[in-house]
Amino acid sequence: MIAGDTTDLSGVLADWLPAQRWYSGKGATIDRLTDSGVVLAAGNPVLEVHHVRIWYSDGERAGYLVPVTIRHEPVEGLAGALIGRINTTSGTAGTASESDQPEPLWVYDALRDREQTASWLSLLAEGAELGPVMFRPEAGVQIPSGIPGDIVTTEQSNTSLVYGDMAILKVFRRLEPGINPDVEIHHALAPTGNPHIAPLLGSVEVRLTADTDGDGTDAQVPAPTATAAMVQKFLPGATDGWSLASTSVRDLYAEADLHAEEVGGDFASESHRLGAATASVHADLARVLPSEPAGPDWLSDLLEELHNRLDKATDMVNQLGPYGDAIRATYAELESIQVPVILQRVHGDLHLGQVLRTVTGWTILDFEGEPARPIAVRRALDTPLRDVAGMLRSFDYVAQHLLLGEATDPQLSYRAAEWAGRNRNAYCAGYAAAGGPDPADFGVLLAALEADKAIYETVYEARNRPHWLSIPLHSFDRLVNS
Image (cartoon, rainbow, N blue to C red; front, side, top):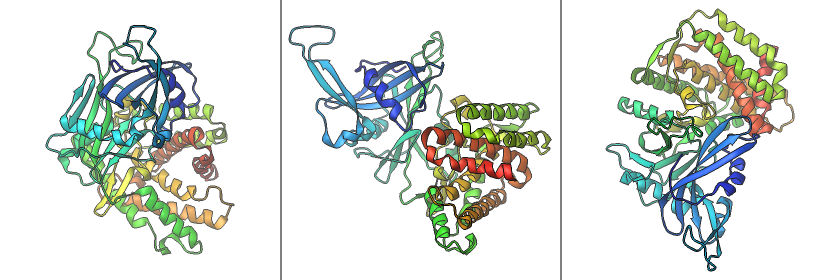
């Protein structure tokens, strides 16, 4: 828990949090909520950062990081960033008098309060320590200061701000004890000079108060820290892989009588380069962080994980029920695999939205893994084919999402499958050509990991974008009919 003498915002945050895209407790009932924080900058407005801890009625709990600005008057241009209004008294804290009058204060999401966003990089450049909040600049880097940040509207599990063409700040909304894998992996890869990552400029840590009732930590041991944010070099002129791939698919659908390789926007060469970039990063991760051959219990542990995730997902999403037997049959084939498997640190949530194409090549972002999983799980060794499976699913996704809401057209459906297959093959060929394990040698394992990723997608879409649910379910249709 963050310690500090700040305004208690538990009332307005309880109403505001569940409506945020990055809130992971959608559908769960809040049993108890606590709030504490620390002041980063005094004045009008006050800039504070709050740690909100939530206990749910089903026994689950979560902690969220909420930076806020508190103003004495409303700002018309910030209506969309308003968290809520609270009332305080104008008298001295802890006293009461007839002159004390309720004083309204307006609470805003600080990451959308643009004029206050410059403080984050300024504090990082100073290496400031404000109570439990510690700003950690990387050695020898230049951090821009004095400029505001513009929010990235496409973020979901986190919130990012872009500062001109120089830096991007990512705030981790879920606050968990331990170093975030994204920061850890960028630290580890920095000495390799890998051209497919964006340099780390610094990070922000929060010291958590040891509290057996809150975070599961022991009051007798040193308080743990959590990664609150990170800053990387911004890559101006870059385009994300999802946008580029979508353009390619759109071009193909506009010329539906042509094959994917015949359309001017054919994406296969880029998919090949992206596969090679993925293999390059995997190779360097294996060099600088632990790796090992899978032990005798690895397969049984994996099967247990896969079946548990399927069972939980089926309970949450009724539409998965008809596909259960086919998915379990895919998992059963894992018992026959003979090829050796190497375990290492991986990206953990790789897809076309996590990569950028610059003039020099592909850059891979966001090494934090699936945000819904605990940090300990995301930091565990895994097969690099987990990342390959994620990207292969993404090729299917981008081909199918442009068909949402359209009348069924067999020719377009055929072209969607053709585009996805062509780019999946190109990605795997690029990955193998750059020295990665040839995905063709791990067909059974790859199929199981793809099914597992599609299950994750099914749960996500059911919770957040029900109108997209048909996309992951489409992959199970193919499985049933194969």
